[in-house]
Length: 290
Image (tube, rainbow, N blue to C red):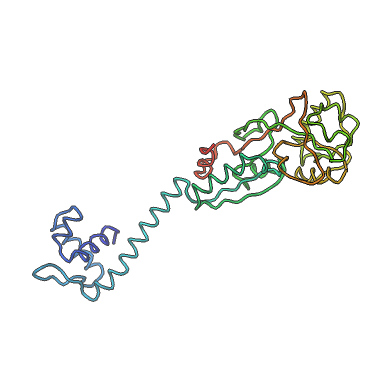
């Protein structure tokens, strides 16, 4: 028994007439009759009672019609499911991001756009530092990551870089320099800094260390922070000063001032990365939205 047999049977049952059903199916009436007879032999039951004006369902035919329609509807659903998956409209997409990346408007905008266009895709998000995100990519726990790239992309990772983001100085509002609109980095030479140290914030940390070195000093770490979003709160508590991406300035914490950096090309880098050769259709749709 094949799906075509079910389609032929349903067509005759719907039309109540072999000739009209054959015309609807686009086949001849004799071949249609032969297919129905073959189906009846296979089932061992008569499905139609032939009449002068057409065909009527038998009791067996009425029972078979209910299940035949269910099977055909299921086959259509299966076909649509396969087609949607092939277009990346269903499935799963696991995305990682750094804490500071979440504040950059390109990240929520891209995710919102993707979710609005591909609502049936199971989208999961994970926050971690850049080192952990890239490891998750290599381990295939994550499909794409918003991370802070170094000058050269990691091996095996395809990268789309977003425009560099300016950085701002963060001072406690009680600091003597807090009323300035802009400051050179060298004005912070004697200050204690709040940083996310080590691998947790390596890329931003390295960029600040580099820029301060060019300004003639090495910043002193006064207080480590668990993540970039915590830095502002620690500065507000008077534990030091810091330098953060400009998007962090939307964190309106009482007791801090954000000040432009004068005379330095200090910037934060952001990119979306995914495994080279990954042929996931859902991932392809995300990349296409870029």
